Image 1 (cartoon, each protein chain N blue to C red):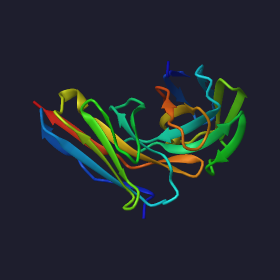
Image 2: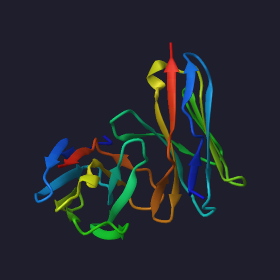
Image 3: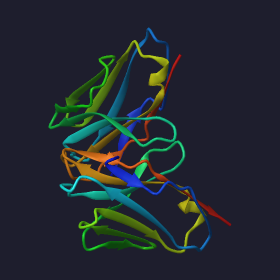
Length: 108
Length: 113
């Protein structure tokens, strides 16, 4: 079993749609969680950290369920510019463990 | 400013060459990382430096040799690489190791011929 598993994707959605990504992690000792966004041939960029209480940043909402070892990312009112690969990341000991990523394609 | 810089942006080298990748950050971060990323795969951790000391080596072949001259700089020395080593090499930094978010540089796209 992979340490961090994500929805396989790709997700093809129209502009304005709401889309949700899910992720599970296997290390119950993980304390920190993040969502990164990566555009084609670019570096990963931190989108948001994920807290137990949930957090929101504009159109983006992240949730953490420690009991189920589950992380989610909700994107509302999708824009063409949201098209990217979204990487779910969990702390594993002294390092971060990346999921394989989910591709989002927003179409007009 | 959350900026990590890397040079060069692109590098083509033969299997007998020696080259170095450079990474710099001025955020006062004390942990720095090298990752390798192949197309359509997530970043794969290679090395971690914490307070200028190597703390993690993910069983990377010795043809890759990291160096941390000071808290702001990180180098990756390359020697006798193989074509399968062609990839995007990413540097990242974080406040300290462990659970802090990491900030990535733009990467060096390496092609080994």
